[in-house]
Image (tube, rainbow, N blue to C red; front, side, top):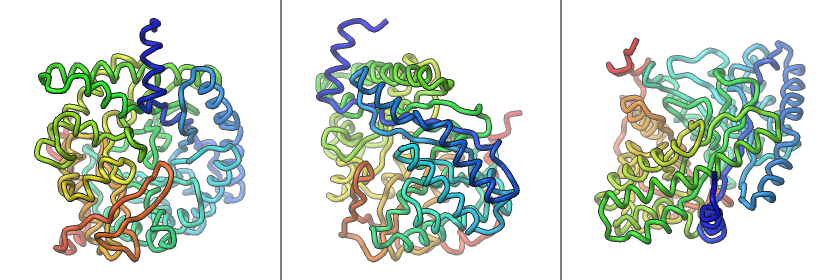
Length: 454
């Protein structure tokens, strides 16, 4: 039971500390939409999404008003489209038509984003997988609300380096096709290792084939709440520090659990998971980097940053699992650059580099996220960055991701503007030395020895 003191604390978190439910994401299976006729497939997809999600936005708004809890986004995730479109789509342009249909359905029901324009190729690519991947640049340039992801590796299978090499080309092509808007298409594209089936956060959300027909997943966020709590224990021991984060995360997660259960009941859709992630925004006071500074760092990226982030990530998980019936998704702390004002400041002052961010991804929830780099960065260098991050995920049995934006026409010292939750970012320096001979090897990197658990 939630007592009156907790109600008062929650109201304070919402009104002064930027606590919000970042997203209610409705996962929808499109497996029953499959048809060899492309026009029938498009109609099936549109109709299934509309019928499933027509009340999602209004229900989210009513829950937000009833409880006084901000619900920032209402989103949809669908079955990876490479699976759904394989029977009907014979060219990348055919897949682009499916993307446009998804975008139209998302607009019709009023959601912010729809994820699942995806392919899962951690061990190899089918013809449909490769066609979808090659269609991504055009699809993202022709749509507004589509989010795309490609899983190229896992601990159990290794890393498909042919897919990694292809993704370097795809990211650069996406940047070129959206260069008039600071290559914004790349903000909607993520490359993953160990991708979870139930992630409610974009751009990596898709409705996994292990899921039921429909499910409600909720992502809750509260970096500002954690920072405010830590302000009260400055100079205290690590034990006090950890207990404070854990207790605060528990309170934040209970809000997510409440919203998830209520959305499930009102929509008549099973409750899936609560994702415990601390997801920052560009708003002042809503920054993971500021939490790290409150823990005792002069700036994010300073020596000790990885240790501080490890503490934060672990204690968020420990506090959250006690507050929710089902926990999943990514869960922990996100460290996007453009979406976190503290990270932006750290990158601009030089305390935070791509290499330091890569080290931090060993202990955080995701990976190299929303990082802007020079537009003339070679495709193979982008693939090399992806390969490094995928290796961290594969070896450490965790989800890692790369969402990187080569901003065409801009270089180090310039800034780019994406707007809204996507924020803005300085162009960060990339290591100039080549990895092309390594990236251009064919085949895949084998799974690590500890993957054999049968």
